[in-house]
Length: 192
Length: 192
Image (cartoon, rainbow over all chains, first blue to last red; front, side, top):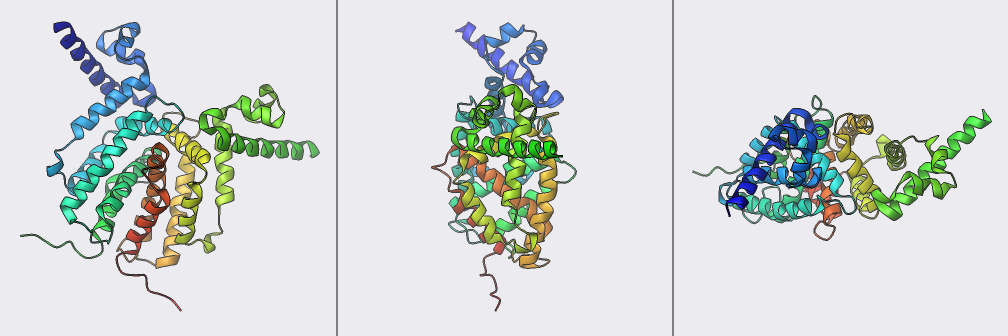
């Protein structure tokens, strides 16, 4: 029992170290060797916890999902805007997410299940946010179920444009324009 | 001179063969060996034309850009809708685009220049389409320059969701909803 707790603690420590290495050196620099060195393990020792770089990176992304998570009832679109602006300050993890998302669409990729399940959860979660904010129909005329995949697509798509050319794309401002689209041309009705 | 023409013809033949292999076997199946076999070259012979798989795939994507290109004045948003629906029928090339886009955001990737230049051209091109259709301000209140990166982001982002789970995401319908957002809740004013 103590051994298992120690093992899980060690695993969490490796994931945190990987996040640091990603932040400093980016996707390509985040090798198993670099992460092993940071936690004082041999590469062989690290393989005991994560057998591939992909498995480690998926664990990092899943951990980020946990950290970014907000209780469903507390979510509002404004928070998504903050999340996009926050992401613009952490290019390493956004790059890792985007690179792995790209790889995941290829046949038999180890990250495919993670991303498929993630989107299957994120779309309904965004739908809930939109329904809580706007009810059954957005000011723009879309239903929450129609708008949710677009919300997710815009966030992902802007990340690629921004990573490739950070000076040309202001991710936060662009996402703000998308929220303007969702809200429609009228100013949203204010609630007392 | 004849040798150069022959060489360029051979190059074009290889790119067409690669497109076929991609359509049949997807991104991972499109190996240099498989493409070489299709055009009756040894892998060594193919390397004379394309030194890496990435270089060959970038040539395929650039060729597709040419085929998909419509003279700027003829573009309308409706054509983009048709393009998205057409893409839903060719998963192999969309998968190749998406996988390579993902890889391209990593340090020193050979496809990075292609994608950076592509987006630097596609954003203003979409802006021109939007301006031709709506003038200086869209019904939704955005300027064409604000809407263009969103249009591109939605197309890219939906492709990832669709590739990961084709049954859950109707790419054409979802893109249609985005066009509804751009047009705003009012029906667009009809022109005689």
